[in-house]
Image 1 (tube, rainbow, N blue to C red):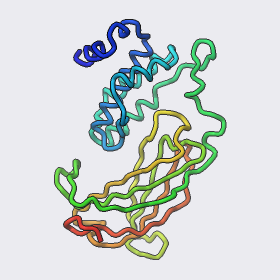
Image 2 (spheres, rainbow, N blue to C red):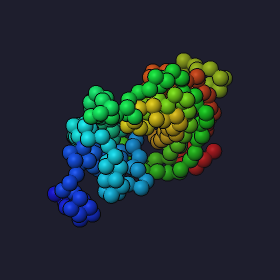
Image 3 (cartoon, rainbow, N blue to C red):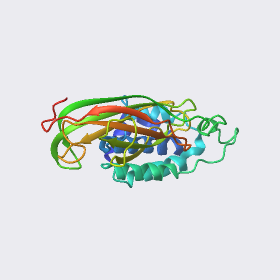
Image 4 (tube, helix red, strand yellow):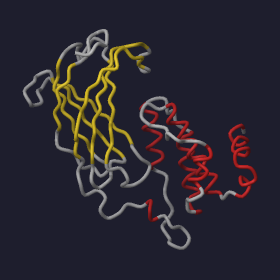
Length: 250
């Protein structure tokens, strides 16, 4: 009730003339922003406001009311405070069905896949390891040494809207994955659109707790990224050294 009252104050009588699509679109935008504020995976739009959402929602085709309502329900029913909850929310969002395209009554061609999408594999351009120091870990409930790994990925056909990444951490520095390497799997979404993401920075936070990977130790990191079409990048290899037990960089 408070949110609707606030929108009414901001938008005045125009609120009464909004289409069902505009109203449900604003609900979806608000639900996404709320989820992003809690989520370790999603980013809130930098310039988000109720007015910004309203202006954007005015341009949506009138046939999308049910679709945006589904998006809003999917986000509102999920716990976005964890990676698992965020992934579950975005999976529900991906199940929301767009209505059939009709140039007269439901012009949604811009939301549909184009013929060129899905033909190119992603490429990992750069991996950078940085050291924020001692940082609070929400999952562990304590302050721990942290290494941040940023993976810059490009994809010429734009389908980095979702990704799955495999990271292998190997203590043997020889350019090949040994039998003792540890594997970590990550996944996420970068956009609710289709074929509209040709570059993304994937950030990985590694909190060290005294076990593997060990403090002040250099490892070879092997990365493979899969895009929304299931195409995989070539393996990218990067050496990184872990911080010490006080979070200090090497």
